[in-house]
Image (tube, rainbow, N blue to C red; front, side, top):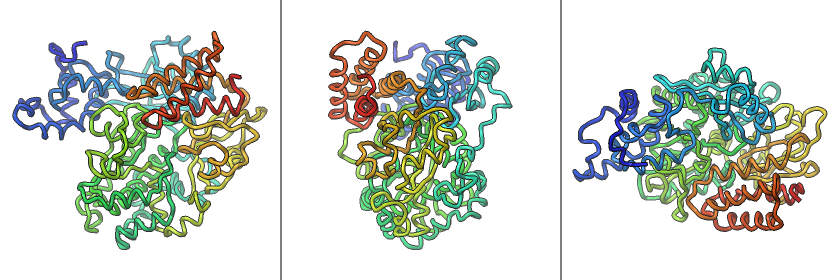
Length: 601
């Protein structure tokens, strides 16, 4: 392909789409470097991801003409713009229908009939009429389908749980008025009976997520006033005393991270909320954003006050249309009423938030890959050190926390760090949100104090379906590990998981009964990591391919005598030498299935 696009011209619709994001075109655009304005051109690079979304939302794909026009306006070489666009799974670089039907083929949906759904849709509508998709983050309503329709305006709809008839209608006729997504409270089975015992999810389903007044009537923004009254140093002290650690899997102490950023003399500081929960089986952050968006905004504002950040970004996965609309409305409302902006609540500090919409890249859950994606580059991880607290987004000190970590800040400030730490254990404090999916009677989001056992959590979700027996539980998602049915009486704490040789990760609890074909399930894990590897480092780029090839031979054939040894060698090489957590954990679940479950022996 000629990446200069010498004869490609944008359509009027593409020009209008770019105008809406970048402003009207000017003759000077594309010539800043020749005019000595390289810094001005670099300052616009972060608009690239949003502009790519604008093109696809309008015409259904990213054409050479549209990409060339975008490159000219942002003064980005076409080869670089193409490299970014081709990095993300949600962007199409070949012309396609305005309507795209994404059918989830990932782990949770696989346990709830996605394979049969895909086969039935192929027989009913043809293989080219839909697109098999990685996890859509709708695991409690599996199997799930996302329908997108380009246009002005574009439209998106969810079908979950999906059946052949409903999806066939969407394929042939598009989004229908009857396609109304389930209420977010339906994802919280605890809400009806034990709401008073919830902390982080207490308001979900109780308050109107679109109403700032309703949020305030249920205690909203009291924590921010208290935080400003106690001062930034004391806020960090309370977070440190609470022993809050990151809930995304790394479990790094939040107070230590905040203190490191607050102490940096370089300005400005940034805060990034990682809402790209792309781990198969994870959907808790979506529930929080859809049901209680102002709590995230308030928590980010407290964190920004404590660490000296004037601007924040929420990096939100692209497959969450309702979460994006809900959060954007909440941000706009908060800004309109003075809860964001140049003088927050007239308390003497400035802070604002913007949403960056992801585009289907699991690797962008890694904290430095998020920086590259926001800045308009391929979402590839950076080498560390330097660490984000020193050199992060736009090379400035940056706080990165995920949604669940941040929404703990409000109860910490309201109750005090010591009171927060009284829940759970000395190492694992507070409550934890778990995403229970798979073959359970009542899948959904569950909040329990650290220390509840895995058996208790599964029982809370109704146990395995009647007449079936528990085969295994996958903890932590595709990057996690399996435990056997006779190993589920350990405490769900960081220390308990480590002692048991497993991990809590981001909170995935995927229950597998005796109907699940484990070799097929493991092949899907291997395929997932092959697809999601960013390709930057050789151990992961080559290792994930070799891992899947070996898994195919071991499960389908023809099996070679050395395949198991090769699989272990490749897995160890990825674990030891990959640049980031994707490659380092790509072998974990498969290894645990072999060693703990006896699969493939």
